[in-house]
Structures are given as C-alpha cells and as structure tokens.
Amino acid sequence: MGLPIGGDSRKLSFWKPVVDHIVARLSSWNNKFLSFGGRLVLLKFVLSSLPVYFLSFFKAPAGIISSIESIFKRFFCEGSEDHRKIAWTNWDFVCVLKEEGGLGVRRLGEFNMSLLGKWCWSMLTDKEGLWYRVLKARYGEVGGRLREGGRHDSMWWRSICRVRGRVGEGVGSWFDDNVRRLVGDGRTTLFWFDHWIGETPLRFKFPRLFDLAINKECTVKEMESLGWEVEGRAWEWRRRLLAWEEDSVRECSEVLHNIVLQVDVTDSWRWLLDPVHGYSVRESYRFLTTSCEQVDRSLVDDVWHRNIPEKVSLFVWRLLRNRLPSKDNLLRRNILHVNDLACVTGCGASETAKHLFLDCDLSYSMWLLIWNWIGISVVTPCQIRDHFIQVSFMDRGLLAFG
Image (cartoon, helix red, strand yellow):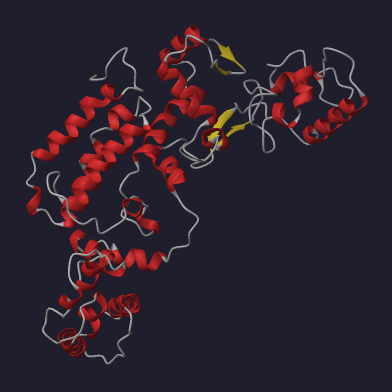
C-alpha cells in the first residue's frame, strides 16, 4: 500500500518520502511560466493531494505540517524554490475557505484531523469489521468504545485516541461534540456512556450517580425494562445514598420521564454536521476551519463566477484586497524609491491600484467607452470595491433582461 510499517510518525525522518515526493513534483514543472491562477490550480488539485494517503492514516507533527506548507507557500507566492520573491498575500488568508473570502487552499493540520476523524467514526459504526475486532482484541473495550491510555499502546492508536476524545486543533473535543446516539429500541445504546439524551452523556451530567452505579455498562433498554422511576429497580448502588444523592436520582428520573423506546427501530449514530449521510471529511474540515466573520457572499460569488477563467478571478481577488504590485505597494515594501511613484501611463499622478483602474485619464476614458458600448450612463464610484459591485449588479441586470 506504500505506507511504512513500524515507523514512528512523530519523527521528521518518517515523513521524508512525502516531502521528497512534493519537491520532486515541483522540480518537474517550469514554474516561471505559470500564472498565479495556474499555480493556484496546481496547488489545490495536485500538490495538496500528494500527502493525503499518509495524512489519512498518521497524525503529522507540527514541524512537518509547517515544512510542507512552507513549500506550498513558496510555490504559490514566488513560483520557485530558488529565488525569493514578494509574498503579496498572507498565507493564512490564502487558506481561508472561498465562501469566506479566501482562496480555499487546504490547511494541512485541520485536513489531517478531518481524515483521522473518519477512523473514529468507523469505530462507532463498523464494529463488525475485521479491523475493529483486531483492535478490540489488542486493546479491549470499555463503555462501548475501544480502551485507550495503556502503556503499550501504539503511537498510531494514541494519536487516534487524541482525535477521538480530547485534542482537536484548538477546538476542543470537536469529534465527540458532533456525535449523537439516536435511540430506537435502546438495545445497543449504553445508558451512562453514550450521548443519547441532553447536552452531555449522563455519566458527565450525574457523575456521582455514575460512580455509585453497580452496572456502569447497562443499556437504555435494560434500564427502561427494570424501571428508571425514582423507586425503580434500575437503580442499583454500591451503598446507601445520601440525601443530596437521592435528589440527583429524582432529577435524572425527571429527565427520563418522557422517553419512549421504539421497539421496531434499531439504535444508530448521527453525525451532526451531516445528519443524512453521516461523517464526511469535507464537512469536518469546514467545521474546523470556518470562522465567525460575516462575509458578503454575493461579492464572493461574483468574483468566482463559473464563467470567468480562474486566473481572471484571482486577479480580481488580489485587486479587491490591494495585493497587486502597484508602485505604492512596492514603495511600502522598500522596493522602489519615493521619487519613482509616477504612474506608468505618464499622467504624472502617483500610481496606486485605485488610480490605475479608476482615476487615471487612460482608465477613465476606457470606462467611458465601455459604458457607451453597453448603452448606459452611470456615475463611476470612487472605490474599487464599490465599482466592482456596481459592474456586477449591472451584469446581472443585463442577463436578466436578455
């Protein structure tokens, strides 16, 4: 299958074949003739796919993620590994989802986590599989899940356990927070361990009762059959309860009061990010990388319109963020002297992106010709963003009226 056996994925040497493969692929391309749009396509659909097989099985160290993303960054921003050029766009913003205003290049750390989450989902839904039975024989099972935390656990299993239970690239227990147990007949749902009612599993909501319970791995069906009323036979304790513990039993019984099991329906797992189809790497990655910032979706859709070539959309994306090599931007990066700011058209004004595309005599006359050709009269906005919105709105109007 191409994966190393018995290696330590924490070591940088373990990932050397992956890095070498990426560098070799880069060396086979004549990058100096590739546009920004061409490099973006190759980066998203070729380079980012090279380490996927390794990342779907092993947790990559932060150092490897940084090294690979540095290679990607140099390729996209500079077009070459040998000659340093200006990085016109912050790499973090390049990796933002397109729907949120970025370029949609994968963040390898979060993508790695999303791929490994597929294993965690399979451990819940494919317990009859041979691979699960092997892991169960090796590590044992507690609370319906494979045991973790043993001294002799493999590095692979430890990394899977961190994804499954606690560590989630800065977003807490992201996997467990998005898993729910749908109860039908209750025969395969663990009463205390599974997240089947409320905001948390009952062992966390009522920790003292869980600690005192004799049968910690009872199912919902067993508890319901014995009776989970306050005086029901389902409650079996290691000792006599204190007054405040009896109050917890009453509270728990009230939570369960309206639960009705469905005899002909089997229990199942639900992935909250995609309740219909279950776990998907795409939705998990989106969850791990989505920010809370509000984005004008209409503007995003107009930039990345399906009928516009990728390199043109990328140029507009850079223009709207003032990331083009205009002379004022070159001065800001100490590439040009303050005396070299004159507009390239010879009009005598200082060259900025706004001046080049809106204010310069040449560009202004060009826009007048375009408006006359279309047959409309407009007031040209003073800002590039407003101008783009105006043109996009008129384009939609022209299409609507044929």
